[in-house]
Image (cartoon, helix red, strand yellow):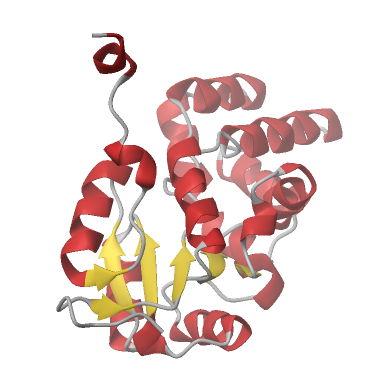
Length: 227
């Protein structure tokens, strides 16, 4: 156990969100490519994309049903070929790792902390990441909404994650980019910090909590080394 003599709260486990935390946000070009395949204007597709996203993340809809729901709202029916392309583009759009955050996760794992991933995520993406994400072994447990059939900010999904992580709420730090998810975690006694950039997030974490901060943030820039 870490000492709290420095006035900061000792942490034994960290729960990371995935989207916009461990990966970068989907790019406008991703949505534009999907809109072209759909034959739907990009602003309209963006609206429909999120309209049915939580049922898709929760596993209520298969990928086929999700994309046909999107199509139906636009008065269309997508072919199997269109859906296959859309699944691929959608998955790849959420598969750009945030190397800095992942590096920090590896550092925390080596320091002996318990790590979990808690994400609203459809099965197609979760299966791709488990198969292809070289960083996945950093995590002791993965809680995907599609597997537990719950989505954040439902309190039950946090409780399921905590049970698997085997760490008490007051010993855990949760990082997520959405305020409602942070608020739900805090109501369960989980320490939480809103994630924006790794630099600003690490600074906020360091003010309150006793755990290793990203060691690479203290590294001098290459230009400084050359001087």
